[in-house]
Image (cartoon, rainbow over all chains, first blue to last red; front, side, top):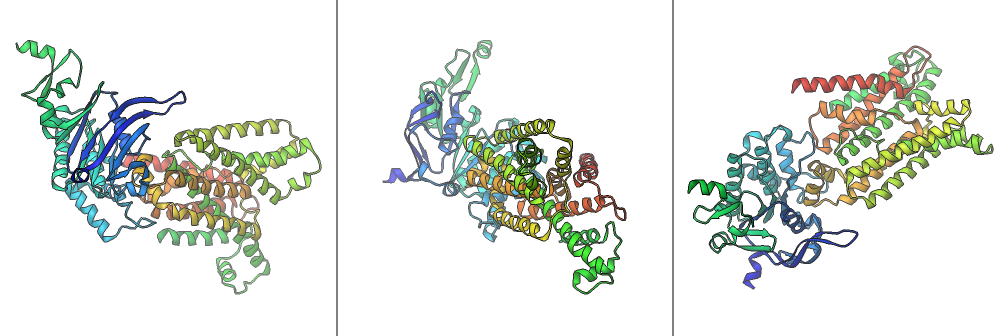
Length: 269
Length: 331
């Protein structure tokens, strides 16, 4: 089955949401998605639509309600945490607690799934850490403490940590939130480069629609009706992207690949 | 390495200073086995000062390790070994024994006066509160909630103690208050070996969770994504802290401050968060600080001894404040 091999994640009739005492509150149901190897995939959708819930469910941070998630041909719930740590690495939105961790030490923690019981770094581990540092170009800051970094630097460090974890799949939850436009572009191009150069599969949730439309291989568009997935170009031309926000305040220009306020456009006319 | 040498120096200083003036040379002679010039000096050193120094080391490092564990687990710089209500549990045990016995029956009073009786009561008390907290912890996923629950247990037990104290006769109250002053000198070699064995057991368990503790520096979700079994790590951390704090409090009273302050002090001196380096460093710093506190408490060459609990805070608190302000100024 050639098709099966190219999928790193495949979901069947997946429902995501939260368990309540009164019954489950479902956020999105009937999700049938597949994530192709080596692709840079962006999840787009408005606030509260369930992007984070989807990411948390796919990464086993929270349990699914029903359906199936297959990771590398195995059901996700059958994979133990230590095993999962070798298949998937995360960059989360949560802040790192205060500590004396240096950038180097922080990235080195990415090697934990491979180190021995007391966490000794082997030569190979050191090599992988150096590689990761090189990939994101942060050689100049490796001896700094993590709380001395700017938001942009910290995000790069977290990505380096994920690279050091040496997994085929890297999942990032809103990696460019709180960053300025320069850093946003830098992170996006970095992620794109990683997917092409290191053949990593990269899945991110984001609000950076313009960057996603330019750089993503595939999009997962979440709106009230469900999730539409497909090649970026295809989704732009078939009008799926323009339906992302069902509002009369906003319109999508297919040629420019950009969303606009309605009022701005009427001014130009 | 440097800290180890420093520890040795302070052990010797601690042994040579006390109400009786013993020359440094005689201290060394006694320790190396050759007879010193006076029989009584040998007795004082081997049967009084040495057990006290060993107790100080165990107590200081045990409480400091517990403090570091709590601060890492709860990712909260204000956490200490006592936040889980462990010390209040121990206090409750002792209060029930010392104060309660006199209220409810006369037959057990004999037990209340012995050190072992107090130690047992304190251990039971702290273990009970710890199990209650652990039981709740199984239902609560959020680590921060466990912290708050521990604090609530603390207030609850403190309230019971207040009620007991209110109805107790003055002499019983005094006995209880003396226990809360803390003391390092009440332990014979038998009690020290119990303390030592439990201490080693905890250190053994501790080594197995060094790696997950390091990944917890990134927060719980990152730790899980690195393959950490969070539940196991959390339970082991709570058990180690419970045993260490419980048994130390049982034998030497609720000694404040050390557990909270030593991890901060150590992190200021050696700027690392790696628990492989930090844990031994914190243990040694704790031991040194406890030895210094004990030496001060002796008021060398005088007959008086200050309560150890007062000394740790009286001298330690200003030092920590000063260090923190200095660190801010440097930044």
